[in-house]
Length: 129
Ligand SMILES: Cc1cc2nc3c(=O)[nH]c(=O)nc-3n(C[C@H](O)[C@H](O)[C@H](O)COP(=O)(O)OP(=O)(O)OC[C@H]3O[C@@H](n4cnc5c(N)ncnc54)[C@H](O)[C@@H]3O)c2cc1C
Image 1 (spheres, rainbow, N blue to C red):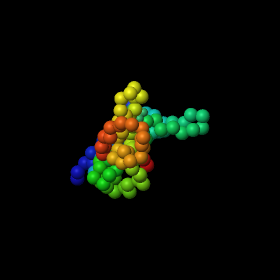
Image 2 (cartoon, protein in one colour):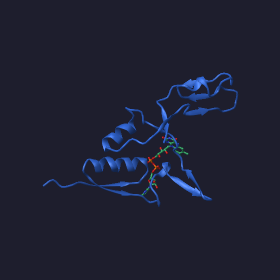
Image 3 (spheres, rainbow, N blue to C red):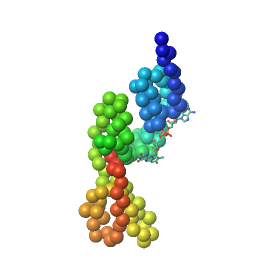
Image 4 (cartoon, rainbow, N blue to C red):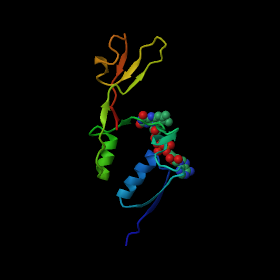
């Protein structure tokens, strides 16, 4: 009889949750240990004065059909969450006279029309869920 391997994953942030889910899917016995009262880590939420805020992560890259998250959802046989492409996904404007950097593919057509010079950086696509 093959012994079922036991694995302990420390931390239920995105990395720990993903590792635990994959290892569990592969048939290992997984215990996920989290020191905080909720899972998610930097991709979790917190409450202040009755409002809910994101701790950090608000955009997701890798939900495109061959992206890393799509591959993981497919492997886990979990439905891919409903998401829409953010475009532009990110704008870095230091307001120091230098041209803003715009991450996205269609940004040129609308976002900073008439604003002057800007540099468009093609990115791999970010999504909002
Ligand atoms: C402000 C901000 C904005 C961001 N924006 C984005 C974004 O838009 N898009 C994006 O893709 N990424 C973004 N990121 C990065 C992304 O959030 C992190 O890279 C990712 O969530 C990290 O996941 P992780 O599992 O590696 O670590 P963490 O999220 O840090 O998770 C670690 C977990 O381990 C737990 N832990 C630690 N020590 C112990 C212990 N000894 N025992 C038990 N549990 C323990 C912690 O409580 C935590 O839950 C952002 C990050 C920040 C801070």
